Length: 87
Image 1 (tube, rainbow, N blue to C red):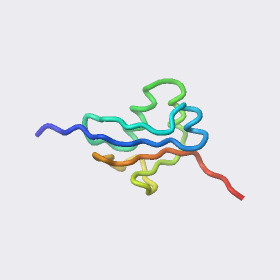
Image 2: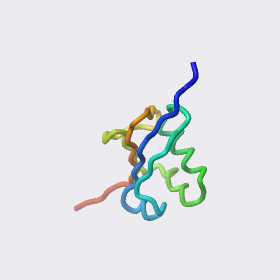
Image 3: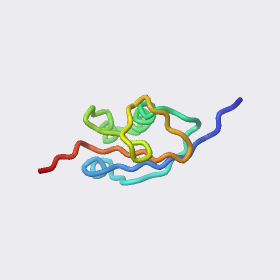
Image 4: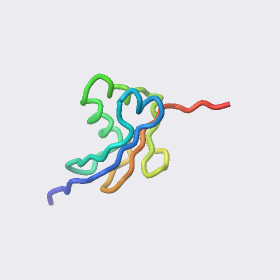
């Protein structure tokens, strides 16, 4: 059975959005993929996108922290953000 394309929203926060020049986007993928595969797809865009390879970048899927193995499905919201410090 052929896989269906999926549509997702991606949000980039704090200094990451500044570095990428993008706060939010909607993309269509050919099929469900893992967060790790999504990050690789995005880093293939070029130099500034390599920031997503930083091990300190956190990922969230539908507003919950998620690891790279988590599968992204149609309609999901993905967020990437650098570590947050406070005081």
